Image 1 (cartoon, rainbow, N blue to C red):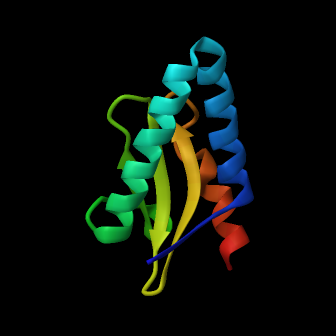
Image 2 (spheres, helix red, strand yellow):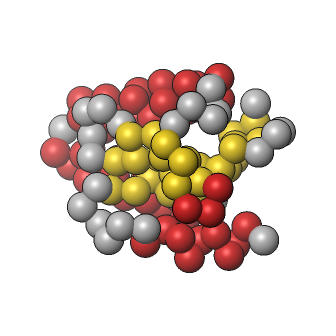
Length: 100
């Protein structure tokens, strides 16, 4: 299944990778590896994870404090946010207006 990401989600991912890259290149690579594995699982089982408002779903990462927020349609998965656990809950909801 095709996976697409909002530009705002990609910016969040770049920010996270930059932060962890400053701590250690190993941590940044481990985050990227976990993201890739998560995206493969989401593509294989798009409706397996927690349902959230606005037909969104959330895939929590195991080793990092992020949830991949996405919408699973019949032909595409759209990643809306790489949401940090400590940010305001649901801050990404205003991005749903970009989808209509």
